[in-house]
Length: 299
Image (cartoon, rainbow, N blue to C red; front, side, top):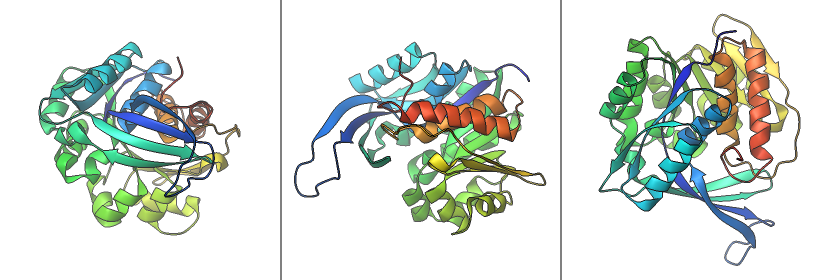
């Protein structure tokens, strides 16, 4: 097993307005909830979890030139993340309203300054991190036209520099909006694609998780399909398919669980561990995430 390699995480930083509902949402009326303001954003969450696992990690993102942006960068820096984050004067830091309950979460998003991510941001971050060995891209950058060029450039620039690459499929509804064929072309030949059950159905149709993962290896070298409490499947092009179960834990809040799962998996895989062990690490970190409120490690 090799030591921890620097990972470049690319994508969103947001403020999460997180409401953990006391019961089913009463549409058109009132539902009691515990409400808190926290740091969020898929790439930022994954970076924070990577730092908590002892991985050197650089986050490439954009925030507004506002108090929210300064707070989000400060908390990530305190968590051990190296922030290659540009401040944008003409757009606010992104905000997501998260409604969490019954093991699920629904998100209402304003991406704000995240849409201003540019190819130059990637080039500057890669130049400043010659020790980087892997780039992890949140697909939110690809799913919105405003940041798509930066997302595509991130994958291309990483490959040119000899880094391995991974992509988190991000969210099922935006995937439906852009279309599976277009998205799969954007991520073609990435080393690893992660998708949850809903995302995998959009990308590979309605079939077993094993069949979905194996189908996706026609586009990427490795594909992981996450099944929540039922574990995950890892398929490799020209190699074996590995299925893993996870230790079941009480789900307090599912916000950021997939981001934590990705961090655990990448922490293991970039250390040279195989699919089975990487899935085990991923399940452990994901379990920590769902056991507490919020999308980041509890400090």
